Amino acid sequence: MFLKQSPRKETGRNYLIIAKKVRDPETGKYTDATIESIGYMDEYLDKYPDPIAHFREVARKMTEEETARRRVTLELDMDETLPEDTDNRKNLGYAAILKIYHQLGLPQFFNNKARHRDFEYSPNAVMTLLVVSRILSPGSKKKAFEEKGRYFERFDFSLVDVYRSLSFFAPLAKEVQRHINEQIVARYGPRDTRTVYYDVTNFYFEIDKEDELRKRGYSKERRRDPIVQMGLAMDADGVPLHYELFPGNVPDKSTFRSVIGEVRRNYDTGRIIVVADMGIITGDNIYYLVGGEKREKALNGYVMSFSIPGATGKFQEYVLDRKDYLGSDGKPAKGGADFIIKSRMDAREINVTMSGGKTKKKTVYEKQVVFWSKKYADRAGVEREKVIQKAMAMIKDPGKYTKATAYGAAKYVMNIDYDDSTGEVIAKGNALLLDEAKIREEEKFDGYYAIVTSEINMPDDEIVDTYRGLWEIEESFRITKGDLEARPVHVSRPDRIDAHFLTCFIALVIMRLLQKLTGRRYSCEKIADRLNRVSCSHEDGNIYMLDYRSETSDVIGKALDIDFTKKRLRLNEIKNIIANTKKK
Image (tube, rainbow, N blue to C red; front, top):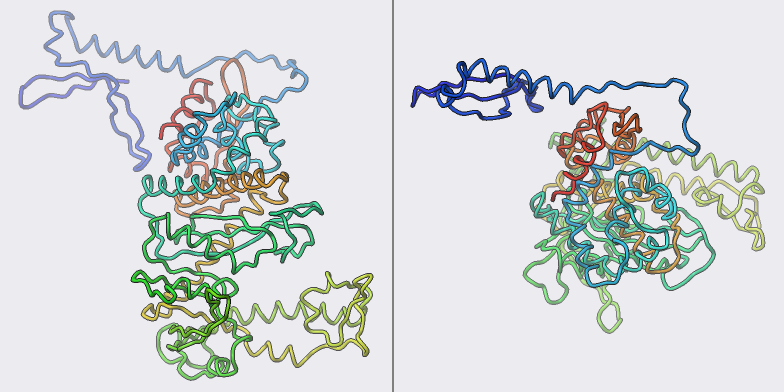
């Protein structure tokens, strides 16, 4: 520290300040930071013979005191042994998760809901542990409880309290989601909900028991276990909006109106364009989006994929006709182009289920965009070749395959059947043969994709880019199932299943916001891994030593104003870091 003199032109007096050099994290340049304002020098002439010399000495002593405070001499006994069952390692990276958890106002929400309940523990503390553990050390509720000592928090509750709290959280799921949405808008600004992405996945249970929620249905992993369906809506920035759970035997398309209806009613979206796959946006759901017979003023729209192999012959002819295709430069496509695209307006008939249960044909006027990509064509060819090789191996030695293991390749095998008792592949009457005609028929459409949309004035390339954004929601499911290990589910009561997925949803929102705050530079997997590594061990007295730093942890820390760069921290400094994350 040093004495800084600032002559004031307006008064001609000399103002004294004790300052120190600090580095600006934005520019990397050093600047003077005021430590103490002393006042005008002439005010001290009666008190000190030489005020300048006096306050220079004060600054020097302040520097010495700060240096002494920052420097610690440790006496180490190299023969010292660890006491049995010692586990001094603690995580500090969770401070980043904690900060967003508090920015979302979740402690206030859960504390308010618990205010008039006779709890002997804090449900918010339980939720904090479950969310942090879901991101940094995913697993069962029991595992989260057993590892609660790795954080600098007072988690003063029992494992029984953890399970009891799940029944408290379950009925709050919709309210929590609406609250999170409101807090995101307040904290980060309006959400981009002009485009809403929607998809459905399911989660399996490693049990053989079904109930009102766990039902056998079409499993994404092709397992025979009971499953639960989840419908998830996401905004255009990749941050989840709203989810709902459905019994495992509910078709994907039947989840649509419940989730999208909740978003439209309670998320202040205005008009939305829903992006989803063709299996979800059916005729009924299109009719629902565009207002049905009422034709309300705020009509919503859709962008969805469209099956070319399953389309009419007329549409297939349009796709395969190279006339009118444009290249990526917007000019008529030439031979050898890697990407071509064209579009047209068309009136398409859809089947709509009316209020009485009868089906009627309705006409929608939409834009049809088709494109071909060499990259996609090559990829389709490679993937098909793998399936053909499997089909040929099956033909050669069918006894090695069952109905389950023949999945995918069976479509290319003629005369295939299965033994009713064993599920083993057998020939139906004749020898197994490769269906070359089917292969050639499919090859015609390699690289071609079709998208249909209500947005007839949207440019073709924007339509394609909008649809491609659907990968974000697919990635969200991958994160939830993989990085957050939401499956298999380790609870069985319906209310506890609901609470389990609520914790997963909160964790997913926090991870997506961390990605957004760091400019989408890192995957969720990388963020979780780096925060998990920001840990420390008790060294001596109240001093903890950290042993990990990376570019990722620096960027996260900078985005959230948390310093993850120090090698040693006193316990009170760690407590201050944690306390600061809890200031909303």
